[in-house]
Length: 488
Ligand SMILES: Cc1cc2nc3c(=O)[nH]c(=O)nc-3n(C[C@H](O)[C@H](O)[C@H](O)COP(=O)(O)OP(=O)(O)OC[C@H]3O[C@@H](n4cnc5c(N)ncnc54)[C@H](O)[C@@H]3O)c2cc1C
Image (tube, rainbow, N blue to C red; front, side, top):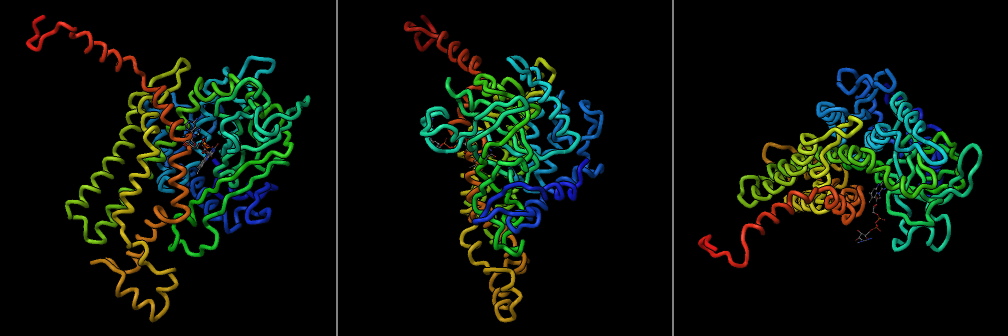
């Protein structure tokens, strides 16, 4: 099992990561990325420690591997996988959305039905299986870009103003394909080992050059990552920005400047039908999003804890209105956790013996997420009041003799000194008020597609037969002649 130090060393390659006007070198030491890189190293160290119970003997390789990447074959497997995912999520309070277990879960889903990728002129099933084994034995961190760049959403790739705005095959060679164009949005790409590239949005005839799925090392020549502003920059002390400094996984536009991808790394090639169906005909989408819901459970529980502690710190936690607000938050968190557990309890085995989390509960929770998370955050914001803004500009202010004395006198709660109160309120602000917090709101609303997409999943996976039968039965129970006393 890979150790954190090995993960960090692997980042020191020739990857093209562009930020603030320059291409960065030595990612693991760069102020924008060193915090998140250290966090990911901690995840790897935790998984590599046998005492943490995150390892299992992978049947595909016959070697120990990280449980988060396992193909679940029973409800019990789903539960042990959940425990491993949760262990990692707790280390980041659920604030690293694209930790290695996210895309790793998609790949487990693909590998469990690798025959899906066979057929056509070239069969790619063996590539999928081999890459999954590589993921297991090398404990790889994959990020993904599966959305076309946001240019004109009323058109698909082949009808945009220019060809190859969306990443597509510009040339086929005997030994592989050449990719040109761009894809969004590579969360964690700058600090991951490999990138998974595909297209999850619907395509139409004519888009064949863009209907591909492949993987490539982040250091592949011609692959460029253009990062949004990093939130860890210019923040020296963890105490002041405890989340921004350690959990900013970064997001990047991925540009493919005629990137060569060998056939062994290709899973789908110029196939409109397969590129769409791969996520749903295999358990990839349910397993990937089950991981996301386990992670989200950790995050919303953390938010509940923050709200409770803030209310207590300000001495308002016994007021009926505040209890009602805390209760509302508790309800929201319970819905998330309950739906996640329900999807596991009501899981089913697919024809290949893979345990699939129940789609009704999984997608039902996802369909609500774009309203649920903002509502939870709003409750925390309301409870915090002006507290997060009466904190000093930096922990160094507390070290100043005169300022420190003033701040210690006036920023406090009964039984809690200034250092503790400021620490709590700065933590809360990093979730509700900083750029990091704002980006997290956007993340929870969009990571699985725009809200209308997530609700579409809920619609398609609810299973309306029973519900409509209930209404039919009710309608059949009376007719135009039925009287109130039951007599016709
Ligand atoms: C923080 C963050 C991290 C992300 N990380 C990743 C990642 O790691 N990998 C990855 O591949 N992607 C990632 N994404 C991208 C994410 O998948 C997309 O944001 C999502 O699919 C929505 O696409 P879009 O942003 O282009 O929004 P659009 O499709 O442009 O939609 C924006 C809005 O336009 C309206 N709209 C657009 N089309 C319709 C329609 N047909 N019907 C009704 N309304 C419509 C809706 O109001 C919608 O909310 C991330 C996004 C965010 C915000």
